[in-house]
Length: 302
Image (spheres, rainbow, N blue to C red):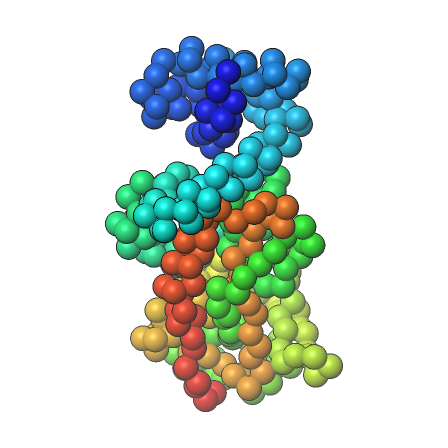
C-alpha cells in the first residue's frame, strides 16, 4: 500500500465530504478511492470513516488521524516549497468559518485577486459566529471579532474595528441627538439579542466603562437585520464599524457619543495543535495585506 497516497486520498475525502467527488477530482473510479480508505483502516485496525448511502462522517479515531495526516502532508508541502525555492505553487482547499454578514460585506470581495494569483487553490467559506467550530468541524481558519475565547486557539490580528453608536440623519432630525449613555433610555433602538436576552451596550473602557441595556423597539439576532433596521430609520444601534463601513463613508449614518467609543480586534484564528501549511500561510498573508486599512474609521465629532 502507498501509505502517503492513501493518506492524501483520505484527507481529500474528508475535505470534499464525498468519495465520488474525490474520484472525479483524481480521474479514478470510486472503488479505487474506497480501496485506499479500506487499506488505511486495515493498516490502523480501526474504522476511520462511517459510511452511509447518503453521507460520510469521521469516527473519533478518524478525526484524530485526520489531524495527524494534515500535519504530515503540510510538512511535506512546506518542505517541497522551501527546497524548491518557492517554485512550487500552493494548491488545495482552505476551509474558513466567517460571521455571515462579515462574509457578505467584506470577505468575498477579497477572494478574486487571491484566486487569480493561485488558480489551483479553492476557498470554502462556512457561516459561523463562533471560532471554536474550526476544531470541532476541521476548518483551517476562522475570522472572529473580539477577544479570543479559547486557549486551544491561536490568533493573528487582521485589524481592529471601532464599536460605534449610529443612527441615520433622518432619525436624528425627528428625535434629537443623545448627549450621554443615560439619554439613550429615551430613544428608540435596534438591539442584538442572544438566546432571548438583549445584549447590553458598552461605552468607554477599563474602570470607566459604562453599560446600559437599551429598550429595543426592534430586536434581532442577525447583524444584517440590525443594519437594515438602522437604515430604515427605526432607531439607534451599537455595532462594529465594519457593519456600516460604506454608510459611514457616505454620511448616510452618523456616529454618536464618539468620545466613548472603544475598539476590538478582528482576528484570524486557527487551531494551536495544527502546524500552519504553506497554503494557509499564503492565504493569511493575503488577508492581512488586503484588510490593512479596511476597518479604519475617520475621527468624527458628535
